[in-house]
Length: 511
Image (cartoon, rainbow, N blue to C red):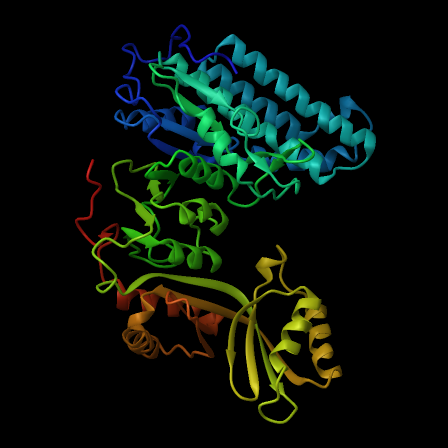
């Protein structure tokens, strides 16, 4: 990467150079993570720089995803390259042209320095060479796909660091898999971060004594395989994971994850009017929310924070910088007693199996046989409700497939149960699973008020499952009543004004 000294300020840089963030500090103080939509083009990159500069008392490490749809385009380029015969055909592929155009136009708009431009153009050429290799070999392995995808983050971070330097500020770009020493298992498309990473990161991001403040810009989503030395991606939530690993390694108090909402909301705003942002979530609640389909952080990406003594994750709104956002942390401010319900999540298109034992009551091993059959079919079970002679299961196609469960697969499953003489099975599709994430120590109150609201809305509940997790109650209703159910429960528990932060008056101490 080019050195972190400022370039000559170009025409579009501010006349008076802004203050270097964290000038009074001798160490990095916060990690800020921005996703692909936040750095989708030159305009959005300028906005990210503006956000970073609004925290002059923090010395930030900025973790970036690839620009906009670049990751998808890179994967598509790899796929289409298998139908090409030579380098010329690869260069003419639509996703390849789109990637080159986006990055060149962004560099032009942000007036990046010559060294960065040369680096990014070299990466673009390398990306095309990898695609040509795919065309010649007629295969695109997991290892190749991981290498291909890595070009997105490697280019976005170089461009952004150069833009920050153009403002007259110090900024240095780091490849996480290289200078920061992110070591992973050799699963190229879903690498697990290994313990050695934490020490490597701490050493790489500890500033020299007397060194000047700098904005570190780091590639999200990437590591290097321990044995192969090849680039590996960190799977779903990979950029968030990069941010929390760095936060844990440097023992920082908070990681900011920037999104386009005021934090974690009480329900899906596309379905429910009057959603409110939560001031606080426990890691367990956040994990349950993510598991049931809410757009929070992927559970894997929260693990480094959960395992650390004090690292918290703050979800903030890039369009409302001063809003405190949602703090995902270890201890609820004010204790657990006053809190009732955190969030309501609806998962659509759920399938239910009602399995009735054909054997005598109390037969041991019944559930073991049921789950063995599910295991063989490779189908993930979501919620379970049992009685002496029957068990009801909801199936979650999203965990295994990006498509719906096929009717043939369900028929085969039913045959397997009935042929084994274990049980009679009834299959019903088209359900919604509504999960109430909250204080299950007050579950009597939650159930009473929830069912009152559902009764008033004439919603029929077909199944109930409450885990011992103390955070989640799940209700199964028909898809046609799903939206009415979520809205009825939300009105009962959140009779607040839109945009109100709960509990009201909660603010960051420094804001």
